[in-house]
Length: 103
Image 1 (cartoon, helix red, strand yellow):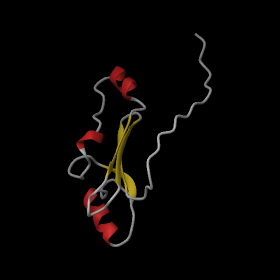
Image 2 (cartoon, rainbow, N blue to C red; image 1 turned 60 degrees about the vertical axis):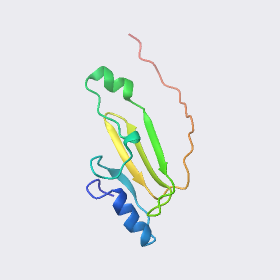
Image 3 (cartoon, helix red, strand yellow; image 1 turned 60 degrees about the horizontal axis):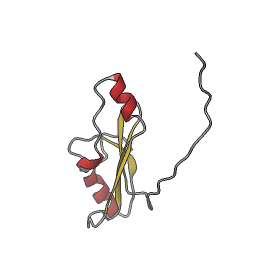
Image 4 (cartoon, one colour; image 1 turned 180 degrees about the vertical axis):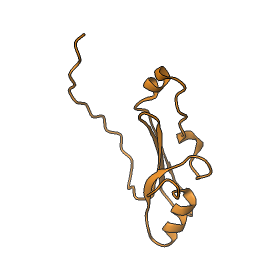
C-alpha cells in the first residue's frame, strides 16, 4: 500500500472488516512505536554505519489489531513498514560470497 495512507488506525479499521494490510508508512502521526523509528544519517560515514540496521516490534495485546508488526530497515535511508499480514518474526542470518575489488 502507498505510504500516504498506511497507519495504525487504518490497520485497526481493516482488521474490523477482516482484512489485512502491509506496506511502507511515514513516521509522523502514523502510530509507529518510537523504538522502531530510525533517523536519517547526517553524513556519509554515519549512513554507512547505519546501513543494514533492522528494528522490529510486534504490537501485541491491542484490541484494535492484535499482532501488528512495525519495523524499519536502513538501506540508503530508513524505510518504515507496518504489517498486519505477518504470522511471526524470525531472525535468520544469511551469508553470500562476494568478490572484493583489488586496488
